[in-house]
Amino acid sequence: MNNIGQRLREARKARGMSQTALAEKIGSSRGVITNIELNIVTDPQPIVINAVCDALQINKEWLLENKGPMDTGSGVSRSAKVLSEIYTYAQGLSEKEQLFILDLIRSYTKHRSG
Image: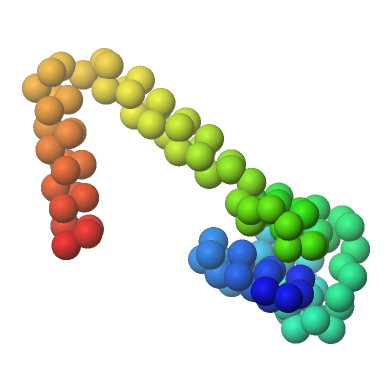
């Protein structure tokens, strides 16, 4: 990954986001994203870079210089928050209800990967 455009495209696709969706999320036009990805703009405005990194939850240093990991690690903390919320709700359930929910998760996981 030699340039910012390629890295931006990789990060955007890794998040399953279209150019239009990313542009809307950062409050710009699709052309801004397209021009960066096609290396028409090789030195984007800092405000655009910051917004893109925030929207995609990627490291600014990775995007600009290909240094360090792509991800900021925010996904891990989000996952921990989701699991914490599941745990909180599950505490209010009876053991029978908890086992039912656990069976649903197991069934979902089995069918999703199979």
